Image (cartoon, rainbow, N blue to C red):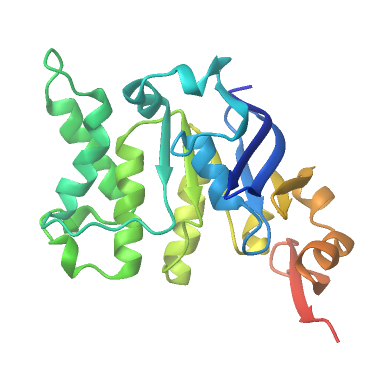
Length: 254
């Protein structure tokens, strides 16, 4: 396992937001996290990234406690794409992506041609290759989201944590970003709002009221009965005639 949590929890003002999470993440997999608003998806990702300190339990990366790792060392292993990440600094797109190389730079290992190549490839991977000199302030919400992903890719992590990465993106870029994440030679943990997108993950974890209530293959955990119980919707399973893929159609409860 590349990442493990045991009895992981976090509380705010005595109110548990995430609690008793036991999770074993398999190296190389794409693990989707789904759940209603307020179920704890974003908080769990921040705990896995080391941004928040657990109120209880622990996170381990390749058997080592995350809490014992130096920030630079942790950043070489884990990259986190937040759902809402903004900056007021007057920077260019390339400046923003170059920040992803920070954990790898030292006085003995300064900026090099390798770093240039990684930044260029990261921009190309998210379809932003021609935007390097654009001002951050001129970008649309979707373009900013793609630049943030490029920065995370430039970090060259082993574990990529993504909090609803398709927010603000048009359909074309939603599909291309998810396909890119699936192709990357990294372990990805992705919080998703769209349950049909979650069907493409290797495994899916379902969160409800801060607890992990199901974990497994998408078709095993995303059942009609569970969607009713957790999301309060009535779902029908349909088959795409183009490729036989299984999809959900949702209906409000009467």
